[in-house]
Figure (cartoon, rainbow, N blue to C red):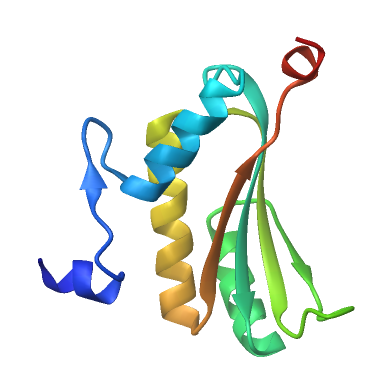
Length: 129
């Protein structure tokens, strides 16, 4: 087990696309439920931060990269500042997923936050099927 595996709780990358094993499993389950990952769709990636300045710094990084995002202040029972990255009309291909998850983990690490995960939304055609 390498250093990064220890830092990431023993998570492993899997072939053929280099996704984390849990992300590959979730993507496979999404496909098994009827998703065509080559179809343009909405996807969401979630990061949390303990403070507004940390969330804002991560948002500034995203803005500099031209990536759409939204900061949501603490509300209801959620004490953290949330940063949502949304993909619009982008296929949830393994390469896109790997690159976006890696970027989210890098942002969380750099700005003292936590990458909480991702979700792919079904297209209207998939919902109808």
